[in-house]
Image (cartoon, rainbow, N blue to C red; front, side, top):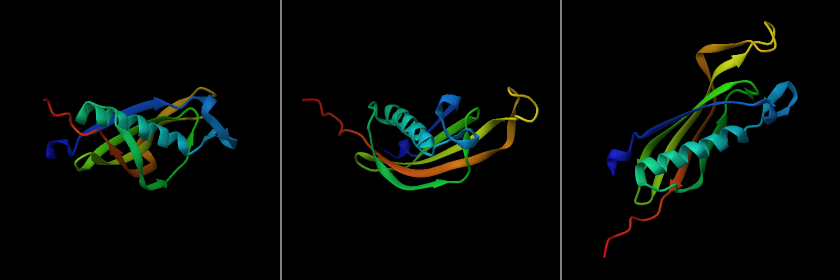
Length: 132
């Protein structure tokens, strides 16, 4: 099972304006958490051949805002493997952001990216089926 430790999944997504909930086109923190769930699903598929279930978070920190028009990159890394549980560390970085003062559609790549959200979560997968 130790070969599962270090398994990494990366997702990138454009944040649509339809997801803005607050002034300044701010997106709620739950947006990052939903992306963490998607990445966790892929982690479980890759490590165990099953979508698994998200059991919970042991910590979530919102470091910086995410805005509509951003491109975010979510990374999930398996850091611990139990019999059926996997502890996963998540990060969400803003890698591109709009530049409204240039034009309504201008954007730039951020170097370095901005850490928006980090979390540690636990996923659970079914016990392996033993052939009869």
